[in-house]
Length: 191
Image (cartoon, rainbow, N blue to C red):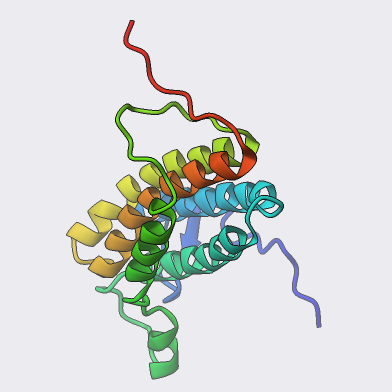
């Protein structure tokens, strides 16, 4: 049996959390979910441009996209919500505490190849690098939407740490992509 992509359940301006609780679509949870979804799309776009330059980073970005779906699950299931029911359902929304350390390892590995920064750089360095910078700035916005949920205790702190580290990863990956493309990183010039 095929399910319809449209349910009409949100036509009145509400949507469901993973627990089944309905909230208005302008709830902070849905703002965060939308920003994380947009980030996942930006990472996917960057991944398409990175694939030819660096298959290892392309694979890391694929892993990151899966972790971003995990972020969405964690955000869509506030800790104070009831109705999770089964242990399997609870397990499904747990966030992997090793996700941020994995990013740190990847950052450190890439950073060893890069010259030390002495200036601010402008988003540049070829298409892959530029798209990674777009993903980085989108990540910062998504992080700003997730932080209040973490601070309120609705979302586990590991999610906030991951989002913070992810923008660092995307910045470093953008620098590597510029290097792989043989493009210069453009430095900021004070007027």
